[in-house]
Image (cartoon, rainbow, N blue to C red):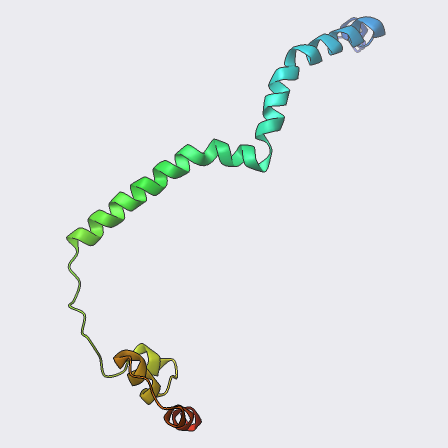
Length: 119
């Protein structure tokens, strides 16, 4: 082995500046259409358009699986009214919840009394 350094100057692409610039310009001209397509697809709308079909297919599969699951699974029978309803659970006075369920119109005085009652 020798301690002499290897001369790589023959491999330097920028040694002939004009020739190097000409190659760079030719390469840029050849790849310009492909770069334009990539730039267009790099936008938000391009990304969404690229994922449109796979997302639609995934949504369709999820819908079919959900529908099949709901068709096969039997749930408990729903009771018409339970002891405590959703309205009472969230703090709506019982009298107002009954008016809503029965579609009965209260007198304004009854409504004021029901709203003023402590919960």
